[in-house]
Length: 281
Image (cartoon, rainbow, N blue to C red):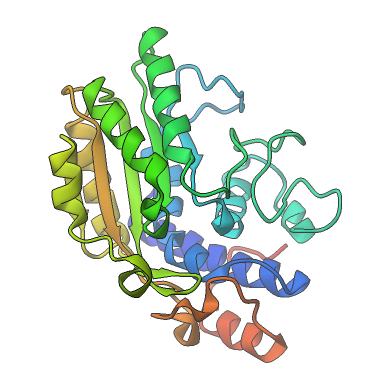
């Protein structure tokens, strides 16, 4: 297991990757990507059981589904830095014929990507199906799913949430990125989500709240707790309180960087705020 200091170094590099990818093509979603960097770096490098060679069936390993596919920059960076594909392929982000499209796709066979995502509200349903498949195959490993808070405004999620508890899908850990921001403003102003812990509890889920979702030690402890209460007839949800644009001061706490690329000067400011690097592509 990788120690916290090493995970922090990888997170800094991931932030650099995100900024460089989005800047190069003047397109993409840096805000949510930066906010989830600590979580995905920790999950993939420290907490998930992953096989050395990627296969779509995911047998005998934990598997992950990204529902909020617009944060593909952080997903691609984490996959590359974990060895799913060469790091220099990050340089092709959003280019024509690239495997690294703005929203993850499967037709080009990019290792680490099991579903096309970005049409919000669907990832949880797919993850639940995968979890049921593992149960049928007597595979004791876990299914992880990350989703945004804004996409919980879509009804399909609540059908899936109801279905998971009714069918005792207890081998799944769903994390909701609670950054409180979406493309049009704050989630509170667009369509308030209310008390999500009470809602998930009412649907008979186990709920863990991580109020410092950009601190790696807090993420580790939340994931540890989540794993310990799996396989107990209830699905598990982590409500992860994060900061949109975390690690780049002018991008933090605002929806304005949901889907906007930094210019040349802004790129340099962001990179200078994240100077320790494992090696840019």
